[in-house]
Length: 330
Image 1 (cartoon, rainbow, N blue to C red):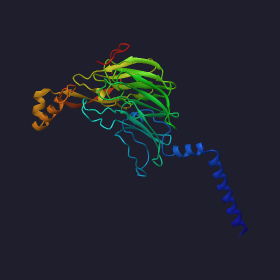
Image 2: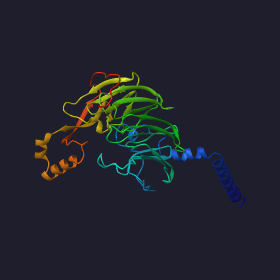
Image 3: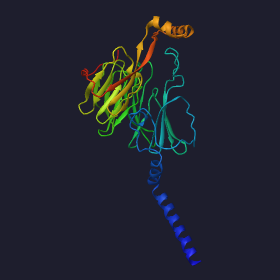
Image 4: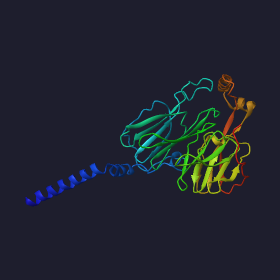
């Protein structure tokens, strides 16, 4: 019986020490808890270069969160789920948008779904925010890309602004973190790739891509960044701060509409090939063809172009010419 009492006392003292440790050092306890199901950082779109956005584990619904506006990006790291939204009417025609085109950046507790903070940003968030060393960085911009955009960095705990940088054209692709150089890689509608300081957002370098990048978020592999534009796929060196090569796949266009996926020495992308009215009539049901014409005629900013989707598979040895120092979007 005496041994039983000693065992119970020992367990009680162990629990007391654990509670005392948790009370005096809650940050350490939270870090250990968050690290068990989330990675420590989220450095680029979908957390890697495969475009899969997959984390190890099993699917189990433990909470739900209803955002006020359509969610287009999410980062899961350091015990947080950080989401970015578009405007409430992001699918409207260009001449029918409401005056309020703000997006929202919102942080949730990864374990409970509880909202920790939420804040407006000047325009749509169209790609994943990135999360690194206590900072959340999000790019923003909207269609048409002639509207201004930019990048904002906020404190992951409070949502307070650390720094912000504006761009003349929208930045719909997600940013990417070059952790080896403490640099944020950003590219958007002005057709320029920027390397920004992770500390204060100052421009460390910039280089022209010769065409706008609509939605092809930069993918980082080592010291190389891959991204698509309206006309080509580009491999960019963060060491030399210039292009390694450009790949132009013949008649295909709009390589900047989908982010590149990487696998070993191969880069995968997509493009579209214009059909023209004659082929479009022969391939589309007449009702669908007429619907598209009517929709395009509702605004002067939309021109009906009929395309088929194609896939491109580019090996890492593709060559090309270097870009001019800077080229703005047309």
